[in-house]
Image (cartoon, rainbow, N blue to C red; front, top):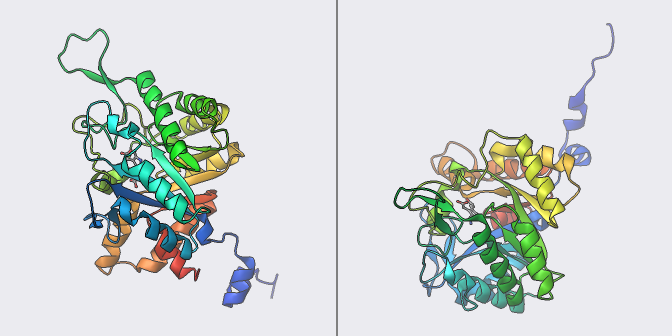
Length: 333
Ligand code: PBG
């Protein structure tokens, strides 16, 4: 006999020991539940590519708010499907649009629920891009479009104020235009909304994993892609530049999106910023897990908890996830 064997397995012997030495814990309070409000609906409409997730009518907002709170989930983020769309996303600025109405309903039903609103024009533009388009300056080609950053930022600032007026606690720009955090903060402050928080989708990649969302929010771009404004999945250092810019511009919280292919990025941003950090466990990540579980390839509940735990372990304080209600139930809330 030489040295005694070092035995990490000693601490894995019982559930109680494992609980004692567990480094990462999940709680329903860590989750933000994404929801889709469709102005044209009277009843929920299932989203084919996202099992268990529906587009909702605004009339359901009150009861949904109560049900979500009852599960122990304290936060939601709202997306809107308007009745009509145009090239400038005008219905995104309609005070009677689905998001302002749903915010007001949810806040009046459950005042303590943290209601976040996604701020982006893609849900409201007929072309589906996250910005106002203009003819590329100097181009002689017909229909040679580019996203007009600064014109888009003006609309985003108005949209943020609109959602704040409706009662949103947090406005969350997801467009990836430059300078929008500063512009939105200034607009909110000028209108008296100093206490409305700004969660920036600071680090958002041009990802294939948004596929099901584009059905959910009916916002697939009609031409081209989003690579001119969302980040290249190959870039890690650029994430730190984006995060630092949004922090300097006044963001209260940062987000990395998607989560699973970007756990390294979550860890890096966590190490470089002391702001609260969220991660978006996006639609494709959700649907992939369900598709595999439906075919009996993986255990749905175990895979779900493993995914959520890994996102927290990487350094996210909170997780935007379609699993929120199911995971909260498993956690026994
Ligand atoms: C844009 C937006 C998108 C998502 C959230 N906000 C889609 C996109 O950028 O194409 C994706 C969320 C998901 O996939 O779950 N407003």
